[in-house]
Image (cartoon, rainbow, N blue to C red; front, side, top):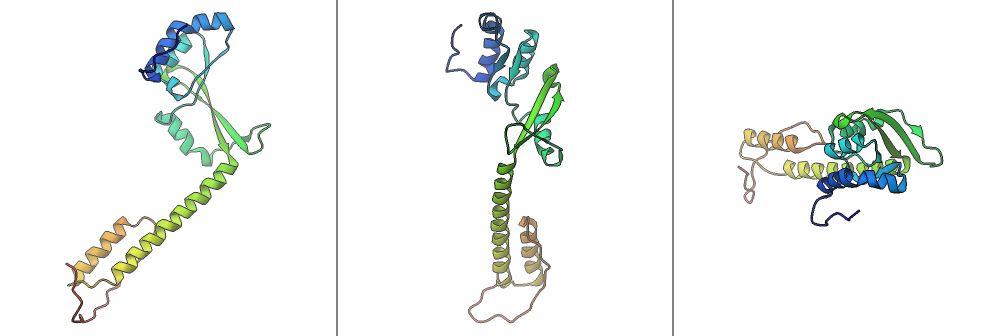
Length: 182
């Protein structure tokens, strides 16, 4: 067996390694599983492993549509505790990606979920405060006419993801040093 070149991508070299070396690898070590990172998970490589009756373990990359759907649907899925791992839970599902029947296991760490929720909450608070400050700044800005003011408000409203407001126009005479916006 020879090592793969460091000058080629894993996604292409894994397929060659699998087709050339798995049979001898299995015979020499009586290997039951072939373990690789997400670069192993390419249709051609999976099909080659299947043809050689080789079981494999790898992470499914999220650029695979079914994997992305599984992860996005995780919050609504019923998951079971993972025995021996206090904060982990999992769910299994079947897939037939690349025409090969597979068992996918999705894991979730409950502690990480709490941390991620706190981080998301902080980000949303920061973003909403920024949006509020932009609205506050807009409310102090003089405009030439009602149409200009409403256009500026609609622009803020369109850019704002978390804050909502109702428009209210206040007409005041301009002072000597104020310049209206266009």
